[in-house]
Image 1: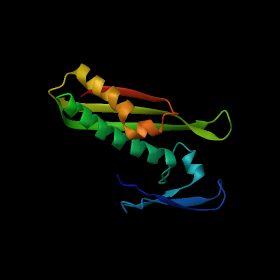
Image 2: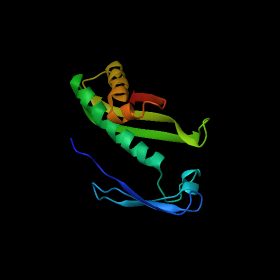
Image 3: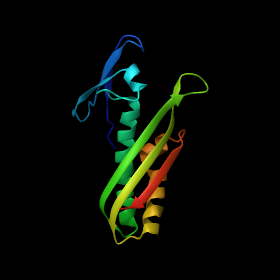
Length: 145
C-alpha cells in the first residue's frame, strides 16, 4: 500500500507565525495555516489540522461505508458525509481534539434503514482514520435521505 505525504513550511512563533501546508503526494494545493485563525470561530481563508483531519475522516468513512453497504447487498447511490472535528483545551495542558461528530445521509437501494444503520456503525469502527483516532470520542448520526 502507498504512503502519502503532506509538508508544512512554518515561520515564526505560534502566536505570530504562519505556514503553508502542501499536499505533496497529490499536488492538488498548498493551503495557509496559522494559530490565531485555527483557534477562532471564523477560519478566514486558512485551513487547520482539524479541518484536514475532518477531510480525511469524512472521505475515509464514505469509502468504508460504501463498501459495507455493498457487502450487505445494497447499492450506495449517494452518501453525504460531514465530519466536525472540535479543538479544545487539554486538562494536561495545551490543546487536544475533543471530539469528532460524523453525520451521514444516504440514498441507498436494496437496503432498509436498519441495514443502513448497521453498516454506518460498522464503518465508524472499521474506517482506517477512525482507527487512527481511537483516543478521541467519535459520535455518529446516520440516516437514509
